[in-house]
Length: 149
Image (cartoon, rainbow, N blue to C red):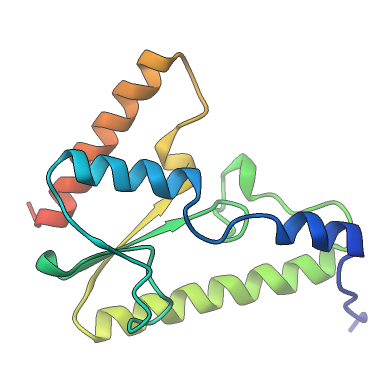
């Protein structure tokens, strides 16, 4: 097996600057939930994986996944970097394993888990009006899932 080398200091600095919470996709989802009257807690430490959004009243958690970090397959943002591929494959594989473990543990504890990929929001495509309509459709669907309809 080839030796896995960590990324260069420059790559590490760039990747470390990427936020782990309060990301733009997460803020869009929170805003949509709030607009529809749903109240929630953020990053609850007592739950496995510290879910992004927790709706205790509905016993539901929402995980907002970035397509790169969580290897959303089939998404253009889910591609591997061209350099140091072996290290990235191992790293992203561990991320996905951790995601599966967290979802399993949350479900075992009686929580309904909804995973939202950043590409599902479609925030970067189309005109402002198209984005607003797309986000509103997404929000209505998400609210139906949360309320169990």
